[in-house]
Image (cartoon, rainbow, N blue to C red; front, top):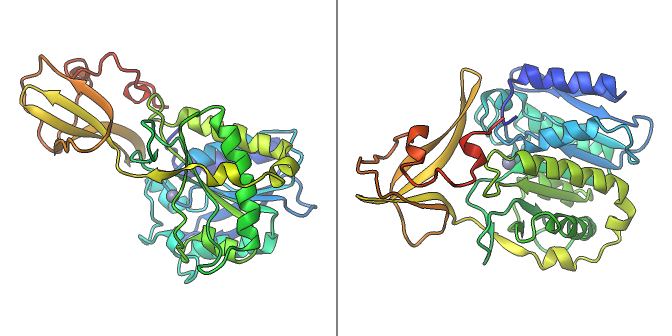
Length: 347
Ligand SMILES: [Zn+2]
């Protein structure tokens, strides 16, 4: 479920909330006037965890995970979730909001209606932990490994000059998470660059004494559509619900020892009779219909690392930049026998 029109997402959220007795609050409106909704399972209690997703409208794995959390009738903690921070951008499957602004660069100025709503809501909740859920591009991998970073986690800096208490608290949770995730993705977990981006919400909340973790889900070689990683994220959040006290007391080593996230991998290199060609995975939405395709970039940069390597002994045609590779060519280009969920099972 990479894409759904926003009205469908609202319907799913409202149905799930009603079915499982979650409260519904409106914390603001988007630029286009859609409600920004917060759902709570225990509205009378102090919030343990705030979590939000689809701040970037083309990053939906967190939404699916939070919908899973809202369907769980056996939660221990008090959750407040905002699965659709950027309803206008999500409808267009675009990173930015309808005004073309990046909400995650707006934590200080609060020029966007969506950023303002998020800021006021999370600060009013004062949760024990805040989870900022994103998807990352396909280029990321843990430095030195040859597999994609299926998860990258970050305890953002709360200050440029000193380590804040909230940063240390969230590092403990990050350590617990990395231990859990390594059971499923033994080499595919990375630590995101913790440069200080003061205009990002992770840094902003961390600086406001709210322990915050940014979780970025990525691809796996057999999961370009991110179905599995979305389930893994849901399972991780459910486990966190069960193990919150244990996680809060973890040593920070596992997180600090994670390999740094590198961003230099490319998608597919194909050696044809006329040379080596780079092909990239592309997804988007046209007229509210999701599409994905493999698109020719041009001559391959052979100094770079590619997730898919194939060789064609039979294809003599030209592959020109911008060309969409028709599925009938996969076999001829040598990827017919690769396990690539993206080729047939995107849902
Ligand atoms: Zn993002």
